[in-house]
Image 1 (cartoon, rainbow, N blue to C red):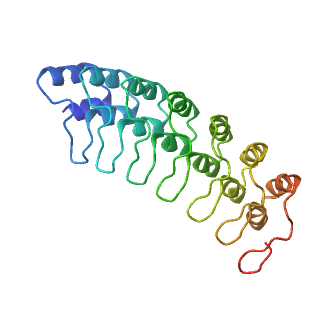
Image 2 (image 1 turned 135 degrees about the horizontal axis):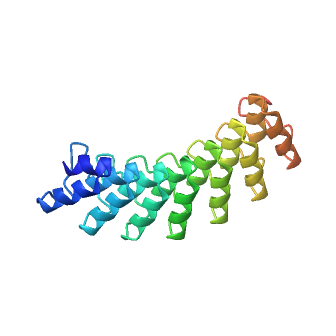
Image 3 (image 1 turned 135 degrees about the vertical axis):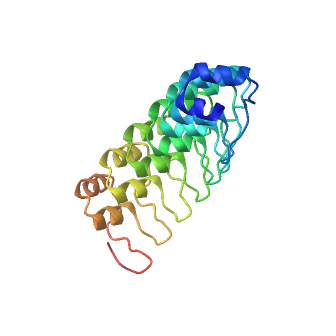
Amino acid sequence: MLHDHSYCGDVSKIRVALQAGEAVDSKDGRQATALSYASFEGHVGAVRVLLEAGAAVDSIDEVCTTSLMNASGKGHAVVVRGLLKAGPVLDLKDNDGYTALMHASASGHVDAMRALLEAGAAVDLIDKIAMTALMYASEDGCEAAVRVLLEAGAAVDLKDATGRSALILASTVGYEGVVRALLEAGAAVDSIDEACTTSLMNASEKGHEVVVRVLLEAGPVLDLKTTTGTRR
């Protein structure tokens, strides 16, 4: 019952369950602990009680997700800060290679991101497809998250497994604010992916007129070609 009470955030029932002898780090069929559920749902009081009872902050579930990752991905910044006080390993990765910072960045949870970065989270780690937190924030179109990562020193021109930079990702989806932020940070406007496609080509093909104009202001080479010889 400890898992159910933690999921619901019922602190009084959590205390009763613990006093009755339920193991604080017992796992359910998903290999999740009570702390994992409380963190995912953002129950500050429940998280505090479980940690005080000795819950393992770095316990992982069946996909190697931790409580810190759960709270970060849902944007529960207060819970994130509470978990950070318990001394978790900041840069653990789940089965997809995501860190807590990536989970927060992919959804634009700026407060959670700031908490993680202030605690020393590594900004440029990559997942299984070589994506970084900056790439996820750029692809998601969260300008505020992108600027937080850039201020933290994120490398602006890293590429994923297919050669896409953060600028290429943002330009393809048409996020003007993100494109401007990346260019201001020195992003290479003519960076190419594995098919020799540039940000300008992608924005042009998708019809993102405003983004095209922003990219043109950065002085790209206008007549670059893809590996198939086309000029998009």
